Amino acid sequence: MKKNDKLIDSIRRQCSDLENHVIDEFAAGHIDRRAFLRHGATIGMSLPLLTTLAGAFGASLVARAAGCGAAGER
Image 1 (cartoon, rainbow, N blue to C red):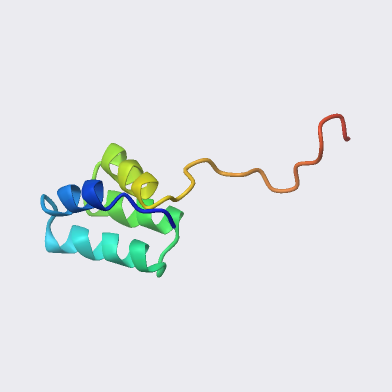
Image 2 (image 1 turned 30 degrees about the horizontal axis):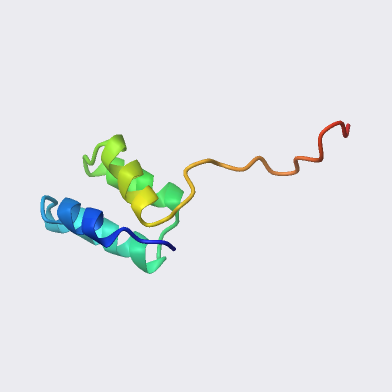
C-alpha cells in the first residue's frame, strides 16, 4: 500500500485511542477496506475522514464489478 505519512500522522494526532486502533488494524492489513469503513463509522468517525485515510494508505475506494466482460460481450 502507498502511504502518505504526513497526512496520516496529522489525522492520528486528533484521534482517540480507539480510533487509532482501527487505523492501526487497517494499516497492518488485519481488516480490509470495507471492515475499516464499517468499524470506523460504528465508533463515530466521519465518512470523509475514513475515505481520506483509506486513500492515504493507498486503498482503492472504487469497488470493482465482479465478472465484467469486455465491451460488447453478452
